[in-house]
Image 1: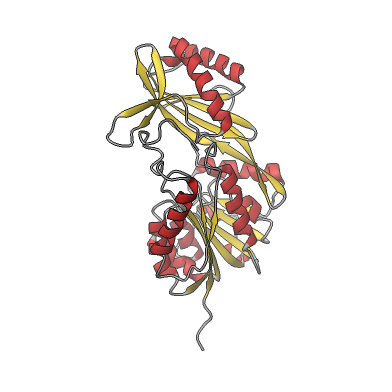
Image 2 (image 1 turned 90 degrees about the horizontal axis):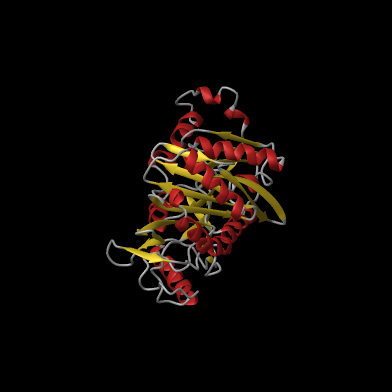
Amino acid sequence: MECKYFGVCGSCKLHNLSYSEQIAQKKEYIKELFSDFDIGDFEFFTSSDKHYRNRAEFRIWHNGDDISYGMHKLEGKEVLEIDECPKVDEDIYFLMPKLKKVLQKNEELRNRLYGIEFLSTRNGMLVTLIYHRRIGERWRGEAKKLEDKFGIFVIGRAKKIKEVLTQDFVLESLHVEKKDYIYKIIEGGFSQPNRQTNEKMIEWVCSHVKDAKDLLELYCGHGNFTLPMSDKFTKVLATEISKSSIKSALFSCAVNGISNIEFLRMSVAELTSALKKERKFNRLKDINLDDYNFSHVLTDPPRAGIDEKSLEFILNFENIIYISCNPQTLKRDLKVLTKEFDIVDFAVFDQFPHTNHIESGIILHKKPKEL
């Protein structure tokens, strides 16, 4: 990828390396970081190095009546004015200059506009305009013209205000193991930002499921892994704390005709207590946890990794699938897990070329009991 802002924009910290050099550097980093573990010749899944981000956000920088997109500079706290970003999905890339031109000419839409978030899927585009002022009916009228002009869904956000013109979600299509899955992605909710690499990651996980019975999934989000994984298991119990993510997951199950998943809006710590029969929860009144025969647990925790209590709990399973967005907390957690588990497979997924970010997948199997 070539970008005229390389070396100035703070987003691409590996701008001085070719993509093949970035891959080599990340592989070496993983080998060194996990040298105390037997990870073998791990797989490395590459990405297109341009137009790979289907989710992006930018500051809006004002200079009189002119506006521009803004990013933090590589050094210092100043804002860098930009007019393009070749990392973003092509639909976002080509919309950005056209959208800016319209916003700049429209005082109602431009006034105290602070930022713009883009969410692009194979089925549509969601654009969120963020303001440092109140917005209302006049804004809605002008924003609706924006929707109609570009064929997008527009949302306005300000302090304690969310203005939805048509809908606050888009549908995404993912192709996994020769099958298409439809997902409902809600504005503001988490979704994987690199569609192609995400599909590779889900397929890698599915390909490593053997001797499956029931699945327990922790931090399931909107069902990114859950839906395809349901084909591999008799039953799936998935937990997530976000109410909107659970609603999206239930919608997606209905659209895809999937009926063997039970979603719970519970924290991992709460579910852990319930499964250990330490506490009773009203949310579980219609679910008999004893009906499940879990052969696998899948966990996709935040950057902080798995909390200590939950980490101790998953030691009870025969197979662990761990998706990590932070190698440092993964290393910390593996120090505990590998006391009782063998690492069966290890993979790296390059979700963010030109950055230091690394996503990993690990398959662990319980060590045989000593005689």
